[in-house]
Image (tube, rainbow, N blue to C red):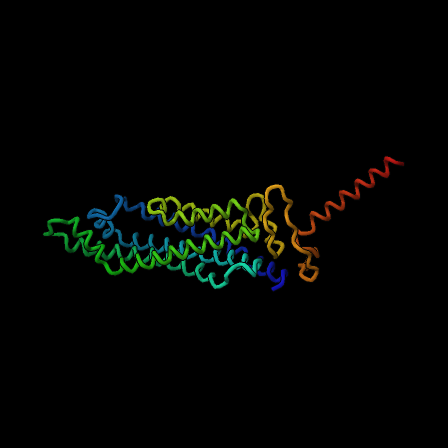
Length: 290
């Protein structure tokens, strides 16, 4: 695929992908807002199960919104993976793009199945709690013996591991291709690893959604300070090491974008500006001599 085709394809998809990157953050907070209406204590106990049974619609709705939020991560993650892969053809394993889809979808499915399992367990608890001495053991047994809950946990574990690997792998190669800065890519990888750290995951998760929203701004060219030049170059533009000058992408006369200008934006502007500055300097010197 030529540089022209790469840039045109990415520009055509940039806006919908950017919207999809910001949607998970909104969906997730709406899900939390719905769940907060339950006013339940932490953990799963008799009182919590009674509340879930009384507000089963809210629980299921919250789980579905959270599931859609996780699943939507597949869109920007896949877009970023393909953008990095097409610029580093000899580096990335293209088959791993499947994890960018499978991970978010399985993780989202786990949220939906988990909410359904909680509603089923809550209904059974309310029906069986009368006449039972130890209602706490009953609540625990109903949850652990709930077949749907076991399926949700297995699906969630597979989805989480796939999602973590997909984020780390994609962010790493996006940084190497020059699509993400070193800081933003490293932050994304650290957040992904944090998702597996138990209680810390509850804090890391919303920050991860914010990171994806930032990636959406980069894709749309709306990020603070502008997006890295590799996006408009259509090729990898690796970040320079400390003390080195930024690497310029190789010229490709047959891959220029047609339109108002015949140059790929961001590639020739600096050289043109430098030539104009040198020309003005020579004119000033000639005036001084005369």
